[in-house]
Amino acid sequence: MRVLVIKIGSIGDVVHSLPTLEVLSRLSPKPEIHWVVGELAFPLLNGDPRIDRLILFRKDKVKRHLRSLKLASFIREVRELSVSLREVEFELLIDLQGDLKSALVSMLSRSEERISFCDASEGNPLFLKKVPCRRESVHVVERYLDTVRVSFRVKVDKAPFAKPFVSEEAKNRLSERFGWLLKERIVSLIPSSTWSSRMWLDERWEGLSLRLVDMGFKPVIIGGADAKRLNLPGAVNLAGELSLDETCALLERCSLSVGVDTGPTHLSASLGIPTVALFGPTPSWRNSPWGPRVKVIHHLVDCAPCRRRNCPKKECMRLISEEEVLKVIDELSSLAVQEG
Image 1: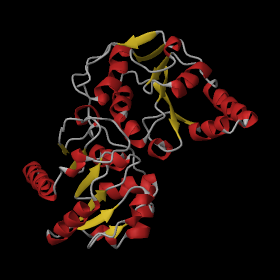
Image 2: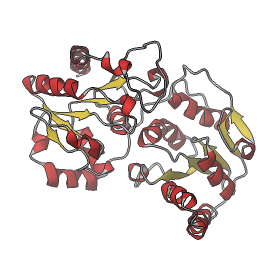
Image 3: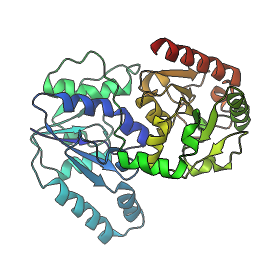
Image 4: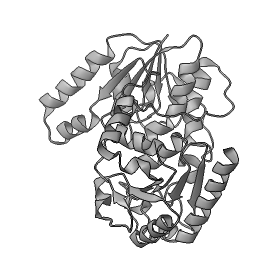
């Protein structure tokens, strides 16, 4: 059976879809899995043995061509995607995106059956089957997995924890570049996000970094290049210097991660690293990192979760103190000792 899965979005969104991939790959007989992904998360899935064919959708290029009215370039990109999608006919299409981009992919593909969410925002007429709606309190990982539960009539009580694929080549590349650093007890600090409302206060990161150094850790800042501005005491700043696969390889070597709601924080959790996630404007019960050793700090002020990209007050993030984070770190450390 050939299955086409569409998940084009952000790194965190694609990480949340890994349990669905894991369950699909464990089915017997295993379906032939084709996956459509965008440029940003392509390196995360590239080479994953669970996927039979990875299809790149250059959505950012398509969007730029459309906005600048470069219609010939837009048509060329869409045609290339269409040719790739139509190489085979699919028995099932699973849309984990549920928006106009995935509706376009669905329209270009050949599939006998299509399934998406009952509340998919755009392109609903393209789908013949809908997954029953769930309460807002249900984690998005479980919502994604519902597409497999319904399509294959399988019983999965709880979505499994699923690690991303990390290649030996990425691990070797990381060792060649930063072998000196890998001897340390690394704590990854992940302070940046495309949403300014999700970011913790710079001075809190400074205080936390100092305390971590006192505890014998080596703080390492990772994530987007905008975090390059931070000069934290005792920390190595690798923001913007690592590829996505190198970021995964580094996270595997970490003793701990502390981060805001952003891609690398979700990656850390999925790799089984003890992870402290700092949440504010987004609903933690629905979008928190999915992993076996995760602690979320989230203060529900009156306006939370507002889901706003920008906020002048950021009260929900201001309420998170250094002491609170250190307490959660201690809880995770105790848990790790018990598991060991």
